[in-house]
Length: 475
Image 1: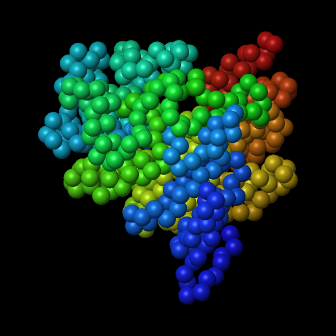
Image 2 (image 1 turned 90 degrees about the vertical axis):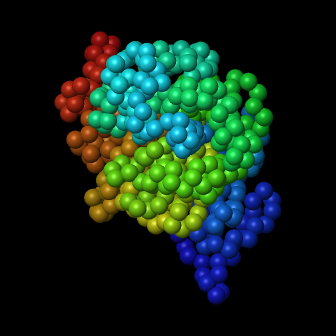
Image 3 (image 1 turned 45 degrees about the vertical axis):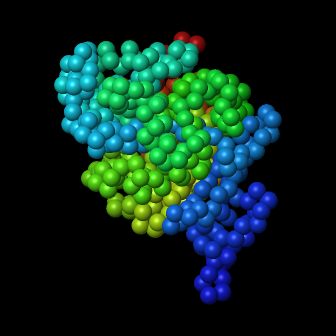
């Protein structure tokens, strides 16, 4: 991006936010503002603060496409898994008060918990850090295929996981599961003898002065709330609402609503030790020795970067609050579209601009360039570009763009992207599986079968490939 030189090294950048001329005296903010204005189709809101003073706040896109209602700084957005950071703070408040301990087993609170291994071995520590081994209720066919209004309370979810086998032995591995935080919410209710919702309202939202945040029911009117939009599976290249794709009501694992300002209030209250004392604040924001998830907190950037916070995402939902401790910036980012519709671009560009590049960021932005080359100049040109560079590709981002093309009904472009993926990652069974799906959608069954077989050769446990081969062979 072209640099702009200012007299006496003071950067002054004029922009237009909500029809008011804004003066940016921060070169990083100026650069970020300029970049965000170039994002095509981004819908959401962004806030940046420096030294606990808001220096940038801007809105983009529409809260309601049908009525053409624009997003504003008071629009409520679904925050998805950000709710886990609220639950983690609540748990540490109770630990701070001497009512809990990190190594308390769940059997202490639920002596009749049906799974004995879980009852005796899963601790609060393992729940907070997603190392419990509890099954993922959120991905079960029962949850996905049942009307979500059946799951309006924490208790209504228990049958989806309590009697199910563990995915692995407690503390054997990391697996990000909403189930962990649902159980933490139940523990909060058990210990406080009040509802999770009431406890969070009185001890987190109230202390942080979050007046527009709550676990609202999405099938009831929510004042000034944005609708969520994802690319349609029914009509190619169209957007659809996400009412039936997530939870009907937020809870301990996330799914509530908040505003730009409220999430900034939370980040500031946490950072300034208004929610926990210095000792427990330090524990929560301490980066783990391995991985990027601690005690209800996510960590970004290079090791020791001092970037912490929490994000959330789902169909038509993207949310994040981050504290850049070393640079003393706080960022809040919200969208009511899919993550790859500008949210990830904004997130990674902001991180790169504030704290510097990392291999992960370099891979993300290099992949964007290669994807663009593939879409406009063809797979051969993109392959050459890839081979001529020392930069690495991000398979997950390349694969996601291929599926975006499928949802847009542009199957030839999806095929090109997945071909590129197989060339870049020849040992990836997922790459060949995706290419098979693109060929299948494009009406090329023989090529689809060929690639599903390649995927199966790389991973004999790929049930999707087995099912698709059987389906295509019998058709």
